[in-house]
Image (tube, rainbow, N blue to C red; front, side, top):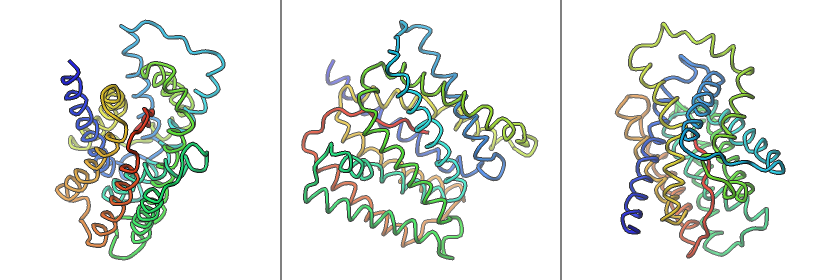
Length: 306
């Protein structure tokens, strides 16, 4: 049963990273062209909140202690609202290739936040990985400002990096909260609060969506990003943590830029530049050095995605 669980955990990791990889080109089809980022943030949070209540049908109710509600609300504002807005506005102003590459920087950002919070120690291997990874990421961000990268903008990539930084803050400072309750309970609270906060802010943008201009392909892309990646992959990811170390789940994130690049090029949304390949490899090497610096890594909560 343990071996079977391990195999299923690997399958779950592959599935959720494949789903998240599809986000980048599909969002690129819609954001800023047919759906404004604010409308997409609001709609996706409403969808996620609705889906998060489905497990409540068969799961016994789990009560959240009063002392934890302040942290729950903070987590909702941080991960549900702030990160989501940075990600959507970032993806609307950058290419799906650059966005997916910058997203792999999260393990390094987690290390930086952990060092500042003094919950981790710096080693030579971590320091080298930190410098190498940041060099690659900064190079990807800066080169987006050049004329050879017409589909990317500097501020779009900066917002994508800020989105990753918010994820890192969540992973470091909300470990106890996430591990205290069932993941379905935590997600339900966070997504519901986020949706309630965003609804009055983004309602006008949602009303202004011109659905008549969207063809069947765009409707399919919208349905995908609103329903598939908002909730289910987070459950798959947390299921995998029962059997696999979180460092291994970080390695699986490399699926995302590879598949996102392939889809983006195949769909004609972007083309792969030589300098992007080089700087991406530099970034991946840095992340790999950081991840492999942990011989034994304790269980850590994974970030909410999308």
